[in-house]
Image (tube, rainbow, N blue to C red):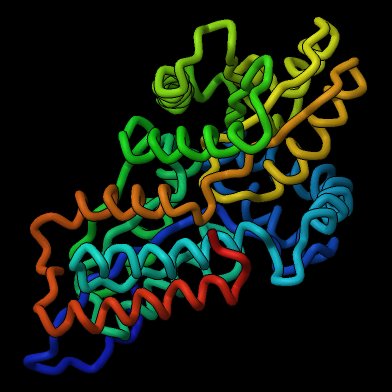
Length: 368
């Protein structure tokens, strides 16, 4: 095995700590070639699709990519902002702000973001941290609920990179935070703030990304963790079982996925005579194609076509202060034991850096 070139060693160099916020990824542009490239990498991950490789290669390259890429590109174009992909913009701002919030709590850490697929990938980011002297790395998935398709795939990419590194850093992984009080409270405040400005619905739909049912039967805990998030959130909102429902979206292929499916469920609510529903996507911490296009556009139209009168999509947590404080709390708990606390003079410098981080986040887009 050939190893990656190591940075030049120097005695007495101060070791650093880094936090890597990892999200799924995004095409470089809302074009067919860019989307095709992204989908090929994403759907080639054996964690995402567990069909035998030869069979799946034929399906992916001969059916899915030729026909799905252009349609997906049109969907990306409908939500693309002047700053680029919403997922990338939100994730970049979250990393900037998280460093500031951790600094205010006294931690001298570097926070960066990486994408599992596409640009700013995990090997690229970990390589830069190595070159910068980061000897402790905390991996923070952007997925509150654990799944082999997401969290474990991050682990695979990190482990694969370090197989080529001779002197690896100390590593920690955050597995999940689906029931963490800070996460649940941030969701609660986000929804209550929305309702305070827009009134309440007859029913709140909590839509999570779907998975093939076979994954659940093979032991993936994602389904259970989604339902626990929903139960805890409903309790905090004071909702009874008739006032909310859990659904699963983004089904791919003909196999059975986790049910109930979001679109048919919402259509049924419209046919039942419900006038207003609100939909929130707790499994996504940043707005993206699946929330802004699939839910806020497609599912909204499904509800209205079925007879519903008022559909509200409640945005993801994104850069809400309650969420950034919560994310800092979650991160801080996993930094325990590492020498990250600042001296007095460094704390004053960090306060200024925190203001700079927030200013930079606002430059990337309107932060809350």
